[in-house]
Image 1 (cartoon, rainbow, N blue to C red):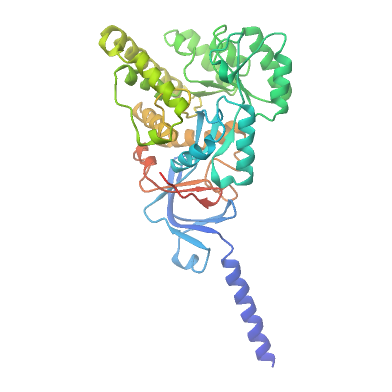
Image 2 (image 1 turned 60 degrees about the vertical axis):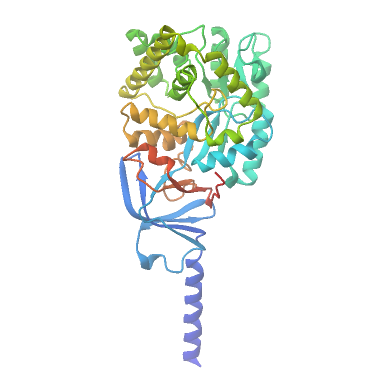
Amino acid sequence: MKYLLYFLTGLSLLTACKQGEKAYDLIISNTTIVDPINRRNIPAQTIYIQNDSIAKIEKFSDSNIQGYGSITIDGTEKFAVAGFWNMHTHVCWKEGLDETLFPILLSYGITGVRDMGGDTEILNQFKEKLSNNPSTGPELYGPGPLLDGKQPIHPDYSVALTEQNYQRILDSLYNKDIDFLKVYSLLPKDLVKKIAVYSQERNIPFAGHVSEYMTPAEAANLGQKSFEHLNRIEDIRNDTPALNRFMQAVKANNGWLCPTLIIYKRKIEIAQGKDLSHPLDTIIDDYLKNEWVQAKEKREGVASNPDKLQELESIYNDQKQLVKNFHANEIPFLIGSDFGGMAFIYPGYGFHEEMELLQNLGFNTYDILKMATFNPALHFGITNTHGDIKKGKVADLVILNKNPVSDIRNTLDISMVIKSGRIFESNK
């Protein structure tokens, strides 16, 4: 009887052990983890995912994973990177766009986005959906509408601020739980200063364009958190003292640059009359398609004016040198594509084009990957949960078939995307 009791106890312990072994929902075995923060690739790693997080990471061994997990993925000869963040895009300007855009973004490995201006109600509607089912789309941060001057450049998606209404409008946005304030080009300097004070008092960042009525250094010294495109900054590209003042101010105030070089390249391609069609044409909203056609009709034909085309190309070359200069001076970068703001920038795909442009400028691929993954988490203050592949972090992963360090274009060769611990099933 005693031996039978020992046997049953041992069987119970073995069963409990086996049940414990099956606690992981997903395992990626024997993969190479790309660690851009430390500029290294870590081969032969097994990643264990439980619920929406990384439960543990260990050196691969066949014996380690026997009996574990409900789903085991063979990561042999594959590369795991943290999910990408498109830090300049527009997705919150029409209800229902999440149903078409979010699957496309995930299929390109975009597990986080910073919307840069749209409708506050739609922003919060999308956020609520994602809160209920995080694996269906990217993490979403946004400001609601653009804050612009009396005659906004984009009236459909802007609020015209005045001395009389700015407090009420800022309070309204703040109470709707926006993530930051988006400043735009025609704001008077005094209003930008008031936004900066409001931002500091409420601990809510402001970011966006540099006002036409102030210098980039003045905006940086007011605490503007990020500088989008090269708006107004390109105006001082040949003014070394002004550039130095701007860079010093950005560093002193922990600012960021999001250059979106792809939009300047695209302007030239449109002017040249290039065929910019893409398989994603079928999912582009009709409103955007109409805008793109108008943009092409407006710019096409510049190619017949050699002087004008040469001027566009010269400016673009200067912009690329400007970006190289900022990187050489250790200005921190975010990567964005401006889908929704620039014609013929495709969702998801445009982000990868931007990374390729940075590679073409000579940026180290580890640096580019860090800009695409960790820098956004640092920017938002969420490095405890996002930005790299570590135990305890949210399981937002992109599994690649080829090494992105040898060529950043390999980020397009995606084997699998995992969002919040679940495998995303792509229809792309």
